[in-house]
Figure 1 (tube, rainbow, N blue to C red):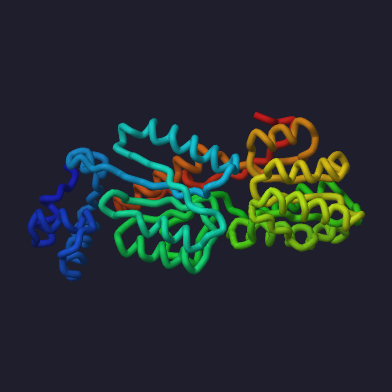
Figure 2 (figure 1 turned 90 degrees about the vertical axis):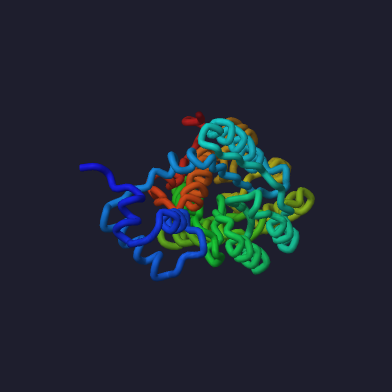
Amino acid sequence: MTKPTVHDIAKEAGVSLATVDRVLNARSGVRDQTVTRVKAAVHKLGYVRDTHAANLARQRQYRFVFALPGSDDPFVKALSNALSEATEAQQADRITARHVVIPTGDAHGIAGVLDRLDPETVDGLAVMAPETPQLRDAIARLKAKGIAVVAFVSDLPNSDRDHFVGINSLKAGRTAGTLMGRFLSDAKADILVVTPSMLARDSIERRLGFDAVLSEGFPTLSVLPTIETHDDPARIRTVVTAAIAAHPKLAGIYSMGTTGDPLIEAIRASGRAKDLVMIAHDLTPLTRTGLIEGHIDAVIAQNVGHLVRSALRVLRAKCDGTEIFEAQETIRIDIVIRENLP
């Protein structure tokens, strides 16, 4: 039996080939009743569109933008490098992607960067930023322009984003809580939690998961209020040093964001680096060194290459109106210790 074609769809729905093309490509100018009729014909005939061939025939380009924080964060640098590698590898698929910098801690500045994206030159956006009213409004404006939007690394569940690409942060927090509890066993001690900002959805969910596990299974461990560092090196050194000095029963530190030099320096300066259990996120040159030297006990990692490739695939699927394969786009949570360093 031959595969159904667009000619078969047009005949079944009683419309022109041009109308079928408009419906399949989600273009405007077709009445709702006609769209329904064409889609019913597609379903009845079992038509499966070859989007790759269609895009090749009309020389379709996919133009994507990754909006990442402007900082010296080694994790962000790793993402940028992975984006360059993935884009180069996917040139044959007519995908181009560029990196734009968004200001950290400036909700209006972030919205301004997104507002300048032009639908004439941008088909899709992957954005890594804390969820704020300004960001939600900016995403709504992008969607109204026809630009696909993916929340990247940290979710934006209350926005109009099309999809989230990243690890399950609630599970990541629970993983950190389990590790901390196992490392400290039945100790009666305090745990310090540090993050750049509690506005970030991943930090909120990690803290929720961390607290839930410790309260359920390790009631002798007391988790202190979260310290927000706002990526300010001087603040990190000051507040972390003060917190360590103020809590003699402190036995563990959970760094929910990317761990930087100032945090490690503050812990080393306290003289307690060797007797504090530390759980960190993201495998970077610094956390790798921390594992080797024994200042960090475990790192909860995610594959940056998989993150970027997944975002590119999801954005392309959104542009094509095709299905997203959830199993392929699920980002795995890895636990790295000194003994299994890659």
